[in-house]
Length: 267
Length: 364
Image (spheres, rainbow over the protein chains, first blue to last red):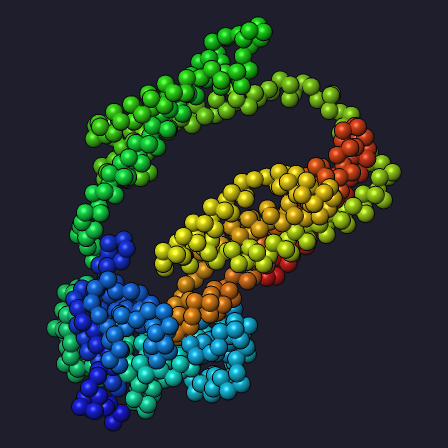
């Protein structure tokens, strides 16, 4: 936890969310009155049932979805007020990985990783899949880093789920991000492989002080990796605290009276 | 997620009345059609004869029908049905646009007026169709002898036209190829604004969608034969006019196929590329294009195949290719030569079908 920067030295939180609300065009309300601050260097886990608004919240932060109410600031810049080129410049600092990996399945692992540098590449060369040599070197380094240096030439869909998610992490690293958003990064992986992905995200957080916001629904993982928790229910923040504060009562409060922890987590 | 109660407020009432109007409109049309078909059947079976003393032809009966009255009666009945829909059950239009109330959903069709209406409507369509297209089973079953010459001729192809036919067959294949090749880049560019999922973002994107779609539908609605006539008077009789005619039609057809393919892609990769700060063109290049290239190729080969078949017909009116020498032989009744040409075309189409199927298997 040495990498956590003291609040005094960073007057701006990494992310500030004020009164965020989202109603989808069909009239479905996904978020309501969400207020949240994430300090630089935190590993914030977002908990909640499917449909509780976790995904929508993450996507409102980098504006993959435009929220219908409220404001979001990233490193002091109001994301909800940006458009066009400004928004794209801000997004370069914000990496994101997804539950379904969202790799381009027919392309090689290397091209998938290189696409993480699109935000700063020149338009015309990038349209013919031409990247400068230094970007290629960095892509290979990032692949090494997630342990897939030997798979650069494979097609993305030839890899296992865990490997694909690590490719997605390498793609995210190409952005040299300051903020890392992860939307259920391990939910579609075999439980045995979850740590293989989470460890890389943890390393980014602990060793490089990257701010991580990660939605998770596995309590084990939350306890092990997060520095702080936020729980959503029906689109509202219903609980905030530290991993140690999380007990059976809180669990019922978030997941409802009928829920039971899926595995023995010690409480 | 939580359903927001009455979130859209005032917009809702307006939208509801629009939906009701739509429903009444649909019902009015359906009922008017049913009435007209019923009238057609009554007139046809009344045994009325025209001024020549013969039974009325389908065209003459269609000309006699009371369209305005049917429209009025349809509208009136539709309105009445809507007013009493609580007792009569939802109308077909309501079921389509507004939805069916809970208690009606589990009913058998025989227990709803809508079900009976649909049943009668389908019956009427079938019988009216029989009369309008003047189906004549007797002629079909008893007058085969008149076509015998043609079928015998086709079965005994003559070799006199083989050489000329082969030469023009090559032209036909290339004609279809050039039309397809020129259509690819245009259709590729037009496919993106024609895809619904890429054009939801802004008003200008939605306008581009509407313009592209309307234009393409118009072009597709005009038969290639008509395009051929236009281009023949433009660039003169010959294969180039055929290329242009098939090109225009292929652009429209491929745009539609391509854009439907774009609409069915996984938008996950698009989100991921967008999240890196990539621009719209880069998102299309990295998030969309790699997903659609193989199906695009497959559609394109299929289109070439179709174009070979179509170029025969285009040749009939002077658009070059093998159809050009087929037409006079049909007119003169040289059935042996026609048989040779038909066999050449059929063989080519068969071969192309096999090859394109193989290639498509490989790609997808």
